[in-house]
Length: 302
Ligand code: NAP
Image (cartoon, helix red, strand yellow):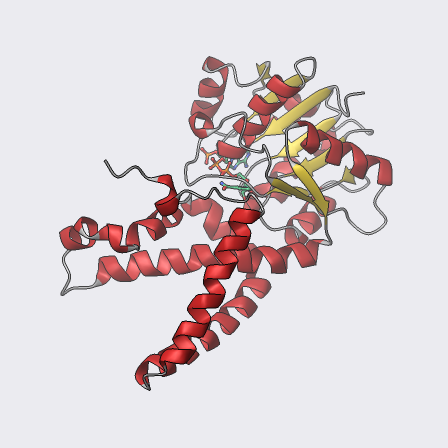
């Protein structure tokens, strides 16, 4: 049996439009309603027929939903939930796709007292944004981390988990605070480092912009993909997952200082040992199917 019959997606950007497309494909009998604050996005969603119908307000979008998924930047979650709180059916489940969980859970429960809130985070995405960037297979073979609040209704957790399984994701359950620490190191810190490297390179006065771009295949261009990610989304992630990011950043700075010393004192063994360990991490990622094995990210060299 399908876990839900009427799904509403609030925020029709990369992730929201991908969820809508995936539901239409995997569960064609489920009614999909969308809403976005941006009239241009609503028009595009309508034109591309991303969902069955696009509502003009958050309240109208949720009026008969049995699942509402918030796909807006994490800093906007509480305000969006407050917008539709009065229209939410009593038996609806509210979920989201936000990249940080503890703060979002707090914002949603405060805005929706008494509602069943089961947050989740599909660990899948690209550096693009907007409704045209979405695609139905985005979640296939990717993890979706469900972060139920303490004492959450087990049946509701299972329905949200089954929803994601039907979109092709593998589901894992985690406490929100644990999720935030794990993602701080696997996602948020790498984005911060990429933003820094790309920013530093473009600020270097003795190296011209054209040289930075011309010789980017030396490694720089792989950071630029991550550093091209949506500015609003990532501003909100760092402000929302502040504590965990600052903690991981502190550890990272200490490790960077060790590397700096190793280079200064010509400690080749320290460098070699670290680079051997990191190569093994890459191997494990490929072995666990989280990336493919093609060298140079599969770029063709013709
Ligand atoms: P996106 O492409 O920028 O889409 C977000 C959409 O939400 C935009 O159309 C935006 O409209 C709309 N929006 C903003 N505030 C709103 C509001 N108050 N009410 C209704 N709609 C509103 O961003 P995204 O990449 O899909 O990210 C959405 C969520 O997914 C974020 O919470 C993010 O943390 C999470 N996530 C992202 C990724 C990723 O790789 N991108 C992966 C996993 C999870 P405007 O045009 O006005 O901005």
